[in-house]
Amino acid sequence: MPMYLVQASYTAEGAKGLLKDGGTKRRAALQQMTEKAGGKLHGFYFAFGDTDVYLIAEYPDQASAAAVCLQVGASGAARVKTTVLITPEEVDAAVKKPVAYRAPGA
Image (cartoon, rainbow, N blue to C red; front, top):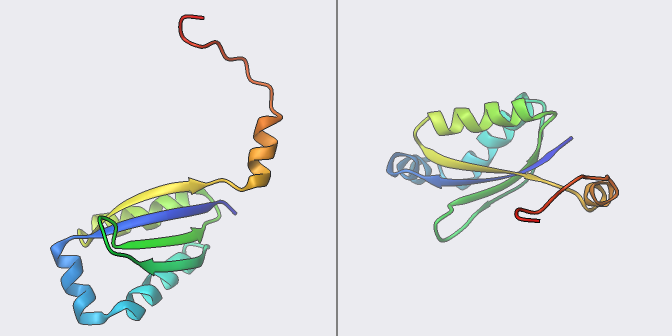
């Protein structure tokens, strides 16, 4: 299954909810949501800085990953950024694929 890095930044309302419920309840909620979408949560971390939460999860397809991220974003509690992760083996396969490319101006 494809792996994703999801970065979330809490809004003021989201931060209030976190203060009320705590970190482990937030992780449990995201784990349950991920599993219901057919995925698996591999890591969930809070952080200092511009990004409040980093999570690594796998989902069966991009539509499932998008559904989870859209629900979180639509809640208004957090802004979400999602990155598709690529394994070293996928990079190996990519570098072996022939691609016709011409650089601009070449």
